[in-house]
Length: 446
Image (cartoon, rainbow, N blue to C red; front, side):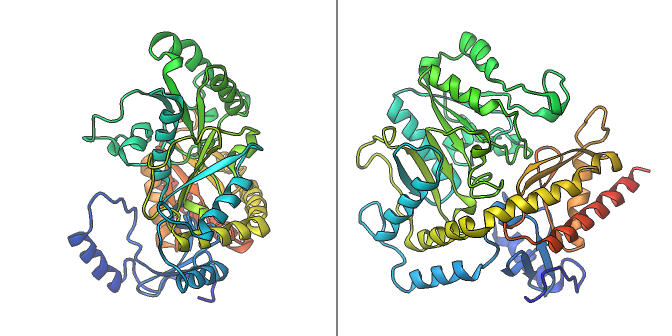
């Protein structure tokens, strides 16, 4: 694919796509959510080609996964080399160099100057399950505190912490006992009524002065689990005081602090980890998605003195697969070499272009972001800030028809999460299409 911009050649979905869609409807689980009928055949960089030869500009990055772009040549070579040598041996029962080498590198790049150890799984939700188990094991406490709007995965433990959409929890109870949810600080929707620029609410007072005094004994809490920037909850950036105060609260009560950087980590915000923007290191950090450019890998990184469980306490047959580790090491090298810098630079450029959209577009309530983790919240009324999910749905679908792949998050936010390799002409194209789709949707109101 030589072109770096989209080209739509057939009505969407095209004839071959329609055939695959029919097959999918017959055999694939109906629990999957698909916002539009994209049937991908191959990818290169920030471009996806469908089965009918239409090409699209991917501002999803496979849901923040292909950090180095689709099929980055260096990552592909690393995968091919490793696949020719050793595909699987199971690091739970045997040793191989890549497992230890990848653990060493991850320990070096994660926040905190203390010694660390790394657990390997295959996904974000597996990493979260490991974090929850380790927190209980180490502290010998059973309770957890999570946040409304959070997404931590769909397996039972992580789902118990997830609170972003009720459909994700409906008919799956009872879930893990001992989990309490508290508000996540959202400057655009400040609970105290402050303007976004003036909001310094951090919700820690609620935990200390309400939750701990009425419902949850702090000495029973194993960990507080938080996304430094909420992903599925709406790409919400908390006040600058939130994580530092949360760290202080946790330390005051001997509670572990777990950062979920599955979506916001791996260079997406213009730093390797979103928590670096706030100057706080967790006791446990989990990562997945962008860590291996599309290969299945999830990691749980903990202070060495916290990861004190005994052999056999927890393991994963496929976790730390040699091919996934090879992809991860190459991904990290590329991120450190050039793509984190590009994420910061292109994120600043995109946010500058978006700055005046709330003034120019009545349905744009808020624009926020760090690096290439950017949210555009659509509303019915800028004064009442009532969410506008119908407008979001129309914008996302219209963008697809014009060759731009977007997804929503939260009640009515459009998220921009392109591969970290994205170039200026691609960003300009995406913003031009997105603005046109917003204008068309605004006309529907009249």
